[in-house]
Image (cartoon, rainbow, N blue to C red; front, side, top):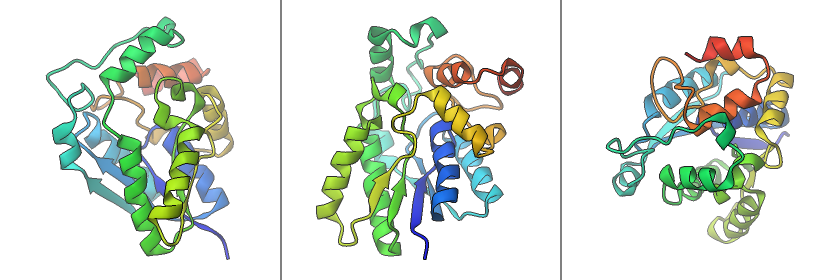
Length: 226
């Protein structure tokens, strides 16, 4: 009998590639997308629904209005501007730390994982699959393998069935995740890796820039972006 998983699917590069890898390695029983008032919520939910439907996986949206109400940074607060970077800024730690602080959502990944853990416990699912990467872990500590390890320690106490958080790309940079995605035939055309919502990704926020840098095929990038 194969091990089963619940996948946190925001529809971005990291979560979608991990979703596709989980389809190979486990029986994916559910994908979860969280609406916490983020600017890109409509686009994320739509893309995640299409990705889930493509592979015949049940998709559930969880609203977190209380998280929206307490988040003061620009990812949720529309009175503030999303930081716009240039490609040259992506390896500047001072600039990216500032950018990360400006889009930070309080304990976001911790909240997501513990909600998923409750669902996994009820469904008797062994794994919770998340989409993290080593590149952004430098400025977002809740993207790191250390964070995963610590969360798994807490789940030993907070659940009876002890589901385990796993990430297939925690040690990867974005380019390596793109390469894995190509090997898995991941649906790049359905992904939404942008802090904004709209018909097309903005191509200017840090999330877009990291995605664009990771994709070496400029012709493909030109089809995705404005």
